[in-house]
Amino acid sequence: MPIVKKISKGHHKDYYRVEIEGEDPLHIHMELILLHNIKEGSAIQLEELKEILQEDLRKRSFNRSLHYLTHKRRTRWEVEEYLKKKGFSQGVIHHTIEKLIHYQMLDDAAYVEAYIAEKLCGEPVGRKKIHYDLARKGIGEELLNRVDDWYSVEHEEKKAMELAQKVSQKYAHLPLRERGLRIRQAGQRKGFSWELMDRVVQGILKGIEEEQDTIAPRVDIERGLQWGLKYKDRYKKRGLEGLALKQRIIQALRGRGYPWDLIEELLPNIIEGADD
Image 1 (tube, one colour):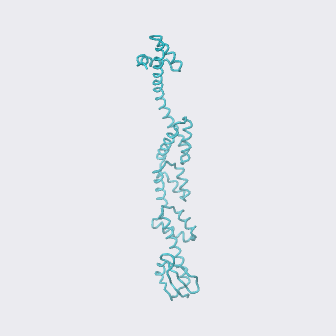
Image 2: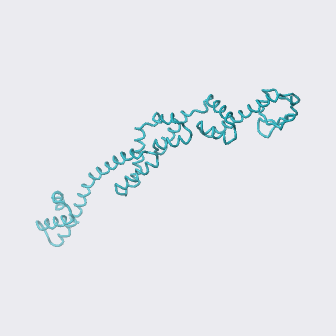
Image 3: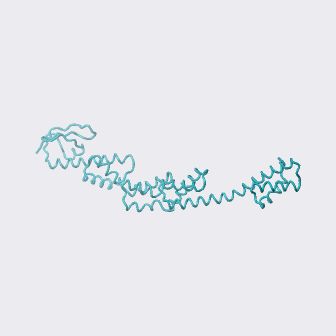
């Protein structure tokens, strides 16, 4: 059996350089050296050495994973891909993943729940985008089909309305049709379905139209009164009074497109109003 010739401190923390007769120098974790009682001058079987090296790879893989998981929560697929890039074999990776799951350091269901909760605290985002982003992180169909558990249809509609109102205010200067298009486009970029955004837009535009319907008559009355007082002042300066003054004011307002019923409502206030 090969003899352990020398054990010295390695370049990495907790690792030692082990020189074995007839073999290239090995770097083995201190814990494994103690566990397998590796000492200078002692003999070691090749099969045992192979197992020690395999165990060392599993330890390296697990430690790499812990470091990777300290930065933020990861999915099982992300950890697997990370370890593949680091050159670990499929067998070592499988062992690492099972160990991480056992210690509850990997849990895709908890990841999905936390991911959605985080997204819902930020800018409005639709379920289509959440599905897409989670699928890119390796989340399987079984969990993707459970997104409703954490993000209901009703909640998504509220988020879509929140986004629509924000975009509507931003483009308040645009005609309603163009404003509706901008809202739909913003919703699709955020992962809301076209059908959902269409329902939301119709509701918002209907509300705006109803508001405008109540504002328009008031605006017409105020402007009509302003024009009536200006015409009264103008024609009084020309010497008109009484019925002649009323007729000229009526003619002027009719010329501006005001209907007779509105003029009839305004006329008493115009005649009794203070002169400019």
